[in-house]
Length: 396
Image 1 (tube, helix red, strand yellow):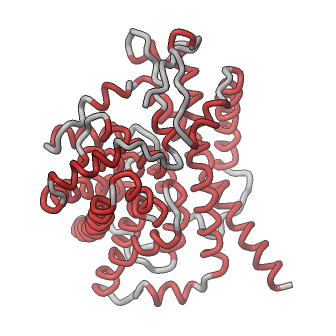
Image 2: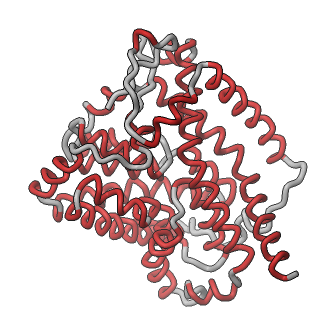
């Protein structure tokens, strides 16, 4: 039957996509967990006061070492804002923690090529700079004070529990000493599992939507919609419509990379791909969370200014890469038509699934599952003196 064949085609394409991105996800989250395990939350917050270049640079660097889940990053940005970080620095941290993380770069490189990875890591800092300038122009002190008052009311989002948990190693010693200690391994395993739990839904939804696009949407229609072949018109249209497609697809975090690959194969401009990838922070559910966290006035400005910054970053990257002759011309992203076979991807997946299993078993043996139940709300306090792993307290 045609309907059954269409569904099977969709599921097969989605499954092949998931298989392609598995090992870089495991690697990225393992490295992210290691960084989070040795960087203490109170040290981070003390560096993010103000909106001068120094705290914004710290926010960018520390965000890049943090979680890539859009919902968790939004909740964590609010937590930092409540603890004294400026709103601009909190937003910079949020942008970096979803768009400048290692796992995203690895998947972009694998599915779309190194030029897209470079574009992401060039465009991300550009977007942060534009956001900082726009915030100074359009977000008054009165709005920021009202946003802080709203943030302090304790309205929780879907990932507030995850963002509030500080499981970094509290013992003394150098970075490597803390990382390879028993407490360090406990902390890495906890961050790894909880980051996976927070982002898994986004990845599954993203892969399913990308699979549906690849299997069901005619390529000719996409090329027409994105004005492919119309030169300057396509380059102008791509960054404008890219974030809109992201907002309506509800795809966020790493889950938007497979869909970006489909859109690229479908004719969207290079700058349009860049702006699309950044737009995971203005999908409709997250806009609703902004309103809960910071109030309507701040949410409207955050959403609008983010959109303008995404479009601007797309234009600048498009122009810069054209001048440097780095704009990709081949529209053959690996994700479309990918098949599971015995190649390097399969062997790497086996190796990194072994690593994931080791960390999951370690997490389970240390009684970590109750922490997952806390991710949907305010976490229960835990006395560090009774924590044999030395993670420290789950702070608010």
